[in-house]
Image (cartoon, rainbow, N blue to C red; front, side, top):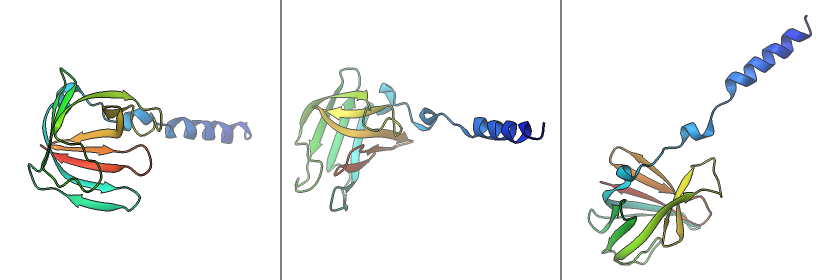
Length: 139
């Protein structure tokens, strides 16, 4: 019995310590992403720079019904993620690079931008690959 007790305790400890990795990921609904988002910061890349934007300088307006995003880009366009003013197709695709980060990633015109997290009026797009930029938006 003394030999079985440590084994049972270890088994109980391991069973209760497990968690569901997907429980930490935020499910982004079409209603959650729809609407107008102002890019407020872009950071990352190999150089690790951080670039702030004025309200209205770069605006992404998502239409989840048609899966399009209208991007209005009034910045000088010299750094980072640089979509010119236009209407683009977007999709949420299965994350095969790092599924532990999130289930789906945002793709605009086949460019994988990364995982989306929305908390209140802040949306963050975090890359799943190297040399990419984290984008922070505000409604």
